Image 1 (tube, protein in one colour):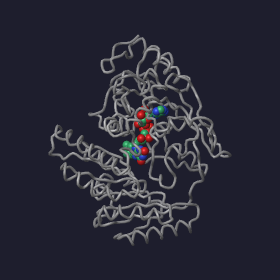
Image 2 (cartoon, protein in one colour; image 1 turned 135 degrees about the vertical axis):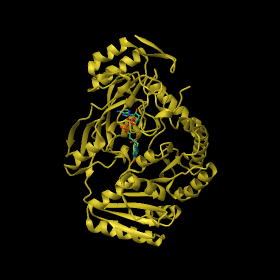
Image 3 (cartoon, helix red, strand yellow; image 1 turned 120 degrees about the vertical axis):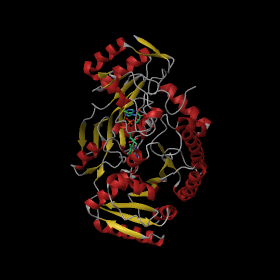
Image 4 (cartoon, protein in one colour; image 1 turned 90 degrees about the vertical axis):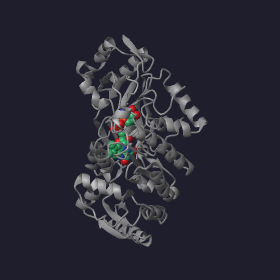
Length: 478
Ligand SMILES: Cc1cc2nc3c(=O)[nH]c(=O)nc-3n(C[C@H](O)[C@H](O)[C@H](O)COP(=O)(O)OP(=O)(O)OC[C@H]3O[C@@H](n4cnc5c(N)ncnc54)[C@H](O)[C@@H]3O)c2cc1C
């Protein structure tokens, strides 16, 4: 049925197993052609460093098909790697030990919008933006989406517990997931949670799944909480002389009674790079950094008042200029610059490491001089942007074009170790939203408490005794 897999030291899919998979999902829904498989060999991390070809990709369309695939994998012990859109930034969807990628992209239906209960039921492969738009047409709001909403899927958001630009006020994906239909690592089908605002009936297994990076089962459906659509909003684009000035303002804004929807930070190099990529202009020339602050609500007068309060506070904190955007066109222009920073750095600085460190909000001002120190120590640029209002910043280590790849690898590793040690010292964590996957596994294992690691390993072994589900991610088991 199978051949040896040297990377795993166990067995992996052969032609007879492929036949079994075809019987489950249909002959056209099992791909083995290397040209087609390439797109499934990486996510949005560096493909050269982390990419690995799967043996096959399967495209189930029902939960029963997913269950049958998982049971087959248990019988013959081959790895399964659940996959949404592959927009992940930690290598979570990469089949780094080979095996079969289970793509949820055909399970993409919106099954129900239940306005009486203010929830929707959706399949895991639905693109997040399609879902957000569909509920918006009913005057409802799904607030738990990340910045990559145009590509990523609901299932991937749940598996990463994604957070986006609205997390200060609305929270991250997990706050909106009331129920999950799960195929367990042994192939059983179970609903966890339900259309409930409260549920303390036994262990909260649904919450354990959120952020488990595809290692504890395959999410096939979700019950998602909806809220009323905010109808008024305003964006402030605030220029500061230095990144430190901008960051110093953040904890102050958060403690003055107004709860902004977003406080996004962008240093000069990040804005410049994104504007160049989009052929856009923003008035940033005199500024070392910008804050993009959004306030929203249902009452336009209240939103106006909040906007004035936040604007005045920024001026008190030394802002050079406060611009206000209240029309849709200008708001979209500014947010597009913010959303495209990562993509722009990928184009102009393809060798880089995009990080998403998180620290307690009061500690953010201490990060900036430390990042500048790391930049000087290692002779690389470390542009920085991100969700400053959540203490979550995308410091991006960028290879100097003159640096050899060999040197870069050494520098990247040493700089990441220093960076992660620093955030841990500040009471932070190495990832606020992108997860551990394979990219941060080594550092996570070195910095996490041994007791916490042991508890995680025990959970993984109990849920997935044959180590089928996304093996080798987050931590090693032995
Ligand atoms: C430009 C850009 C901007 C981004 N902005 C943000 C941001 O603002 N906030 C943020 O949090 N992230 C952001 N990300 C990262 C990424 O988009 C998120 O992690 C997203 O949630 C991944 O969803 P996906 O469908 O692409 O998942 P994938 O990349 O396909 O998979 C991610 C992980 O989830 C697992 N998985 C996927 N589907 C399932 C399922 N149905 N059941 C079980 N496990 C599953 C996979 O095995 C893998 O471990 C950004 C990425 C890019 C490229």
